[in-house]
Image (cartoon, rainbow, N blue to C red; front, top):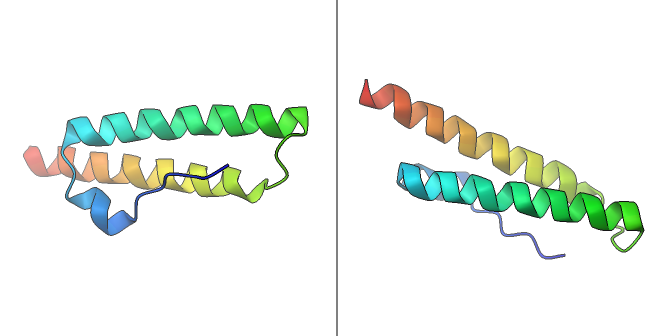
Length: 70
């Protein structure tokens, strides 16, 4: 499975709506990858860690932009 992960530097320039869509996409990829691993179709379990990290980074950028607006 090919992951669609955006580098952290590029996340900073995204708008809040784009970040929300990106997080949703990553969560869907995470669910799909978990399902494939459980069925034995996917062997690259390290991708779960990469997806979790990407989701956390996106949430960090979201919280930073929210604090900056106050």
